[in-house]
Length: 61
Image (cartoon, rainbow, N blue to C red; front, side, top):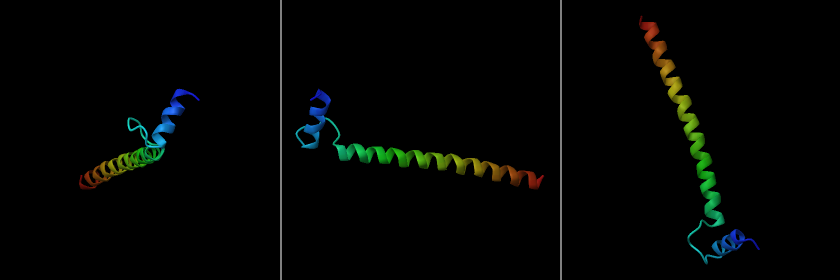
């Protein structure tokens, strides 16, 4: 069995605590995906906000 597989098996059995468990790894992966989605949405909202402000300025002018 490759060394990394042995270490991961030990983590899965709570024999090691210097690496993430499989469940922790999956949770971290999911959180990173959600974070990326929020960041993309935030960019869109910022762009829409700027566009709205510029439209407002043009209407005043």
